[in-house]
Image (cartoon, rainbow, N blue to C red; front, side, top):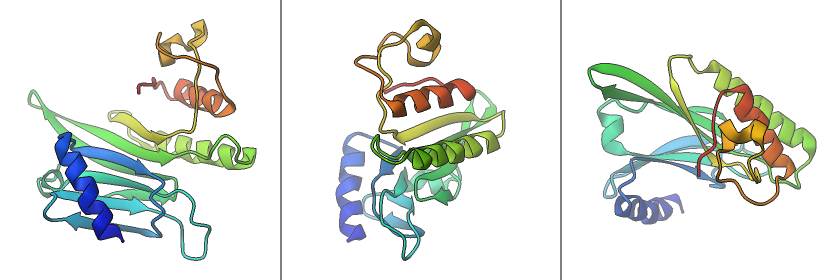
Length: 184
């Protein structure tokens, strides 16, 4: 049951002093929100609709205090693989907003049309973010980007390893189109 899972997760989030975390493969249906009062975290999720195959699902766990102070917006649930929140930051007397996108990409063995739809949706969500916002995309991209070739250095840096899979190529293209870089 979800309350038990959120209580266990809240202990781990407290242990590592995390304010906001993206979660994948939640297998929760529809969309919703629950606050773990003792743990101090609020969980917002976006899952499949009733009657659809229950694959994936994403959630964002946020320290409840940040929501209460108005630093974190209510979520926008795009579909069972994508959701986002805006985080307001006060830095040196200036306000900035970071859009936090949580996603769960299809696996490498998924049909290519499912992968294409995911990246179309992710690109649409990313393009809707105001240019003045910072963007953090977090999630399970089911991708291996491999070693950084010269034309991908600004996206991967010097720390990639192994061989790139098809999902890795799609992720690199997405990052290139949206001026993003990969961290782990």
